[in-house]
Image 1 (cartoon, rainbow, N blue to C red):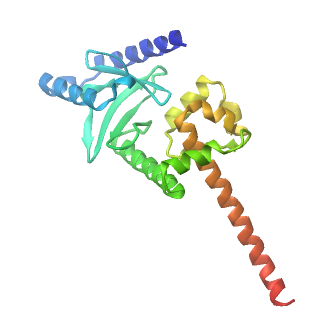
Image 2: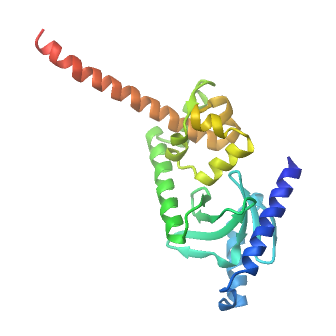
Image 3: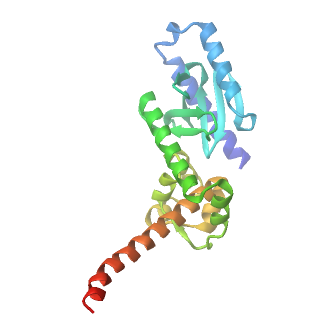
Length: 229
């Protein structure tokens, strides 16, 4: 496992170095500003997520995404710190940091798209938490789900998960086919750790809402019958 991680790190860092060497705008940013920006980025990232750093590139492993960040090119957008970067598959995107929220990976084409995507995901996560009332209740509901309960791809979206991390997990675990065509049972969703609780909680909410809709539909059908009985 460590060998695979090291390989991902080396490739991602190499991809980032290539981006920097081909960056036509790098001369327009002063060395002082680049250094200060990279320092600010490093201060915002928890030490446990940082694998290595050198020459303005910070390699992180967060939420199943190995990402080499171009720390010197980060920008602030309202309350977001948006950092461009690339993974071992040469997928370009952004790591978005926001106080009191989990880091979010976006594959949006530009900074505005990354910001919009992040706000949307955070709102979905907040809506899910509000549905259960608090983190403890959400976790208890998830842990009480049967092992065979199937979570769909839509559940990851409504849990506020990023597509980048979701697909990376599925590809590493070779579960893409079953996830897209059948769904993942709770016993496999648990492999994602705390993320799995949110996904399972979103699944439970979806199933409960479907049951409520069926009950309401049956009630509407039976109401006229009772009226004329």
